[in-house]
Image (cartoon, rainbow, N blue to C red; front, side, top):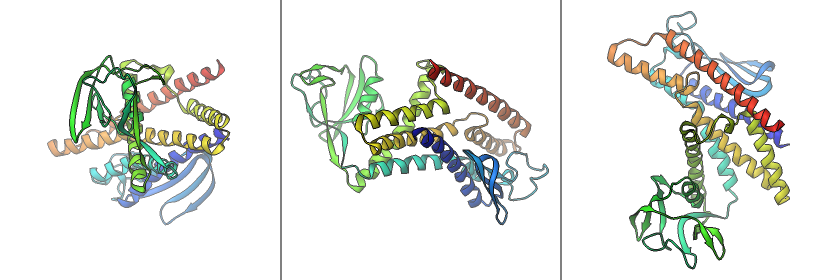
Length: 354
C-alpha cells in the first residue's frame, strides 16, 4: 500500500507543479496548448476553447505546453503575441517560478492537515536543566529561549538537536534572556550521561496548539524543510556525503514504504503510519520546490536564470543573448541530469539487492 501511495504521490506532486505553471500562464495571458496529467498515451482528452486537457496512462507526472515556450521570438509558432517568448521578463519569471511555489504550497498544506489534530507543540524555551548540569556556568539556564545556533534560527526543540549535532567542538549560541539577546561565544555544550539518560541536560517547554500556533508551526516546519534541503546540498558540495548517499525515485519510494511499515508495526496504527508517510511526502514536495529553482540548466531555475540574464542584457546593451546558446546549455544540462538520475537509480537498486 505504501509503495502505491509513494508512486501516486510523485505523480500528483509533478502534476500539481505543472498546474502551477498552467495557472500562472493563464493569469499572464499566455496561450497553453495542452495541460496533461500523467505521461504516455492519452486515456481521456477534452478540447477546451484553446487548451487540450488530457489524462494519460502513466501516473508519473504531467506537463503544461505553452505556445512559444522553447523557440526564440520570430520563429514559426512564436508570432502570436500571447506566446510565452513574447511576454515581459517578469511574467516569464512568474510563470517559471509558479511550479515550485505550488509544490511548496502543497507541502505546507499537508503539514497543516497533519498538525490540525495537534494538542501542543514543543517550543525553543528551556524550562529546566537536570541536576548537576555540566554547562551551567556562563551558559544556558532555565528561562532562556534559544534564538540561534551558529547563525541558524531555532524555532523549536528539534532545531536545537539538528544544529547542535552538526556543530563542531563549540558553538556560537544566542539566547533570549529577560527580553534581551545574550550571545554565548564558543559555548562547549555537549551531550553527557546524566541520571535520566545521555542527553544535553535541558528540557524544553510546550505551548497549547491554538489555531494560531498550528499555523505558526506549520510555517516553521515548511521552512525547516527548505533548510534541510540546503543542508543536504551543502553536505554534497563539501564532500560530507557522496553519490551513494543520494536517493532517486526508487530509493525514496523504498524509504516511504519502509517507514510506513516500521511505524505501523511499532504503533499498531495505520493512521500513525500514514501520518509519517505524508509528513515525508510534504518534505519531498518542498524538496522539489527548492531543487527546481536551483540555477541548473534544463530545470525551471536554469530557465529563470536566462530570463533574468536577458533582462539585464536588454537593459544594458539593448539586445538579448543568442537563444541558440540557451538551447545548447539546456540540452547539455538535460543530458547530464538524465545521466545522474540513471546513476542514482542504479545505486538505489543495488542497495536493495545487497
